[in-house]
Length: 477
Image 1 (tube, helix red, strand yellow):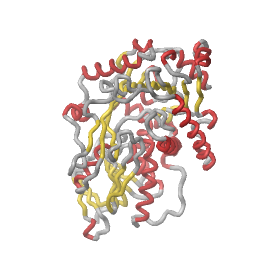
Image 2 (tube, rainbow, N blue to C red):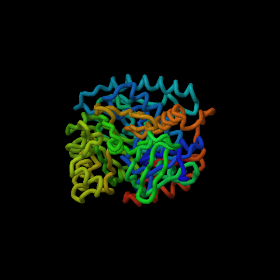
Image 3 (cartoon, one colour):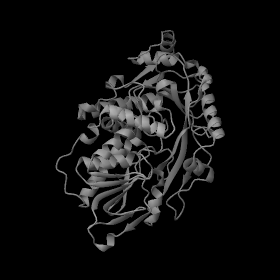
């Protein structure tokens, strides 16, 4: 008789690997299908979103959820977290109000204190009183006169380094420095892949495309699904659709019509040598989709910087945000975007958009005009369940028995989804009731830092990015 797996997970992005690892943690046998040669190839991320401070338009409740989920994921993958702060500002030309950001930060600090009270190990963003600092005009003028710091330790030292480069006279005051850390996708992918390969509870199938899903729930067998690949058929009790922006393809195969948005976005890699010392991530808020859309400059090792510019000639694209239509669960991008996803980018497209990104940063960081092209863009698409394009918290849905659809928008939601699925498979009697909830994943914790360093570098090079993008700006012990 063919082996029967308790859970089959289709898609080895952030959500898929975390689901598989959490199942394995409880000894639940599962199989994970990923069509590429390594895991976590999905839409790139560079920011932990521990408080949602990159999104002035979302609700405070979404920000609180993002903070909680980010802390949970940072505890799960500490070796992928870059412990450097983020500089948050609003240009004088924009209508956003600093007070609105400050009011939200006050709420977030109180919420952070609550999370720490629930579990002291949640204090990973520093002391609550240091979660953010504000700087008025006089503060900025004073700190701008100080010497740059090679190894900044305090918020003021980080701010001094930033002010060596930023034209702060263009910004409303106060300016904010907040403990929203960086998040390295190559390191998370490396640790997850090493752990999944190591544990016998997960059968990791790389380079494996699922060609057909056969629904046998009506046959009263010991399993509910047959998963067809090129060479094998796998018997599965519970099916998890973790295909990211392509979740609709499985829904269509199962005759499910679901309303969703998908959005294609890109970030650009530049090379720049500013000062002898690291700088925070820099955020200059602006209205999305306009020529003054938000500017985001993310530092990496060896003078590489990632750029987001929320304009249609940089990070956003014409027809890049699309919605499912009637009787069609999977939205379809146009040919130009599909070519970028499937075949890669044309050289002149990379050069033009990267230069557009550099020019946008130069508005606030004048010396950035000397930045040069660093590598191919980081790009991908994300799903947004429903029809609200500014939604940033998506979790999981259960459209029918023995079937779950992961609907994460931000990578930080992945652990929440995994826990919800584990609860559901107990309710549907796929596994016995779990008696003891485990707060850490020993499979992940068993992977040594040196192994993560090696594989993350290999993954960056394999995907044709600089090896430096796999390293942390602030090395962890």
